[in-house]
Length: 233
Image (cartoon, rainbow, N blue to C red; front, side, top):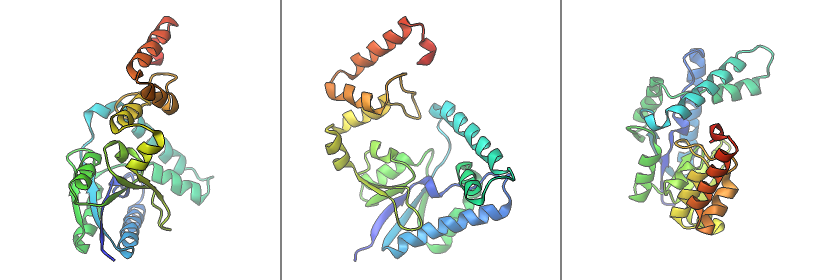
């Protein structure tokens, strides 16, 4: 069986906040290592892509997520919650820090290819796939599809279970072209641009398929403004 090259997104390249005891960081690196082992045992050659600096264009979204992580961390430190809920909250409070060097050390020790992106890893992973350096990507969410990655596995568990997407099948199922897919995803709201109030994923793609996306969005904005709801945009 031919080894399959894989580009692993930053999902497994996060470490717990410094407020958590060192043993928690060790545990995280163990989980990272377990995911690598799972892939290697399946005949996959991993290529790890680490996030770099945050993008200024996402400052508001970054601040919102940081606030959420702090809330999760505070909740996790309460004494009256079970271990399962506490572990989930600790995972949700994870943040990229320079402690990611521990994961890089693991890659170096095991001879695993890796790179650190200038900014977020999505564009680098898309480049690797488009130019044949990797056959598919593993990540935490499906954003990579919008970047044009043909084959994406999301939410891969240590049990080996996950969700697999092929871009051409997604486009075929939605009956849209790639440019329409990108437009629909942006119109529905993304990290760089909030959606217009009342326009979710279903309505966004309805507008896209009608060929009147921008006209419909303009109408929606005018309706909200006329109702005095400009702050809702």
